[in-house]
Length: 61
Image 1 (tube, rainbow, N blue to C red):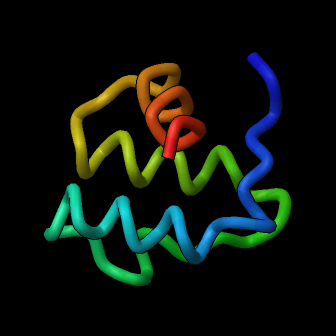
Image 2: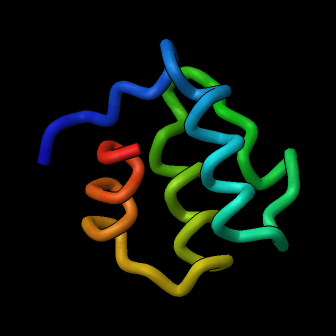
């Protein structure tokens, strides 16, 4: 799988993710460079989706 490249558009993506999953907080969606896996883990726990499914969904936003 390709490395997620979120940094440039993360604020836009974050808004769309929060619309889809209202129970996610800003802390859940805090992006820190080099911590993609940690962010994905939090999203997996909150959404119940698998890693690959989340990556594909986020990249399609």
